[in-house]
Image (cartoon, rainbow, N blue to C red; front, side):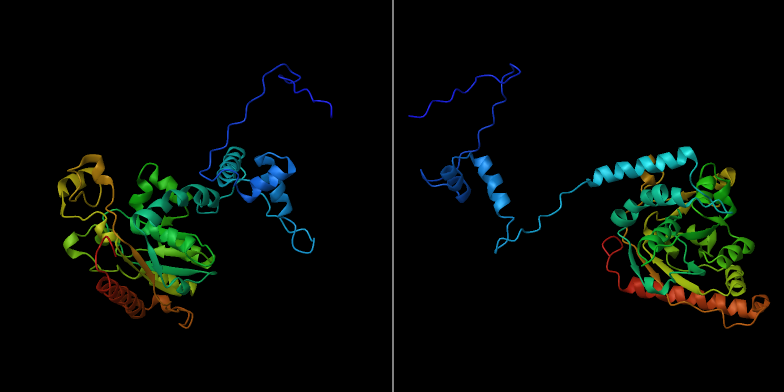
Length: 355
């Protein structure tokens, strides 16, 4: 008879062992268990050990050749995100980032500005882009879009579209009004995001450097129009954007945006208060100022951004930018292209909020 083995009540350190939690009971007939349980019992192993043995044996392919086991995950998504944030903060503290002549901070835009805008773009407005193949992936080009919505969210959503929805991400360098750069905090952020004043000199410099430039030629007349005039384009100024494209010899890409008009429907304007504050208009919407701070939340309309076919400019002769009739005709062509696209998109939309 083999000698009995003594099982100590305590481990070497004198501390009680942690008792394993019992496995849940299975509603099965006595003596009938899973294949793992029966195999483990025949070998004198516990169920947990039997599972481990079965996992190892299952890694052997038929014929005795070892099968390839899946590689274990080394880092979770959260760990990678934390590491990325840590690297970003380190670059900001040590100054290991660069800005261009216009103040564009690519690192800040990539890791702060765009991530802040994406929830609005993807979940709130559920933006769908059309015709992204019309936007060149390299070289200079001028995107010309309609402006609406009381607050310039349409411009911000377009910057996300050209970065996230193109085959090769690009940064949109917007031409903005003087008022934007005079607002505390807003002007500095706009500069760091790559935007600059809406003037021909800056536009031509960016286009000549191969940048993708965006312009909203309706200006405050477009963004501040009443809701009753929604999707009716205002005058496109004197065509300065066409002159810049002609001088830089880059294509003009019409861009039509549907959905922005419904975010802050402007039903009235308090002119005296606007003049007192030095702003183009002081809007009244169904929710502002009636609901206070809650009225600042944009309505969740469904958005569509369509990029039209490029209008080439390289075939025009040098000095064409100084021809007022040519500039006028091209400006009118771009405007009419955007207006007709808006009508088509609106005709196919069943609901402003559901699409």
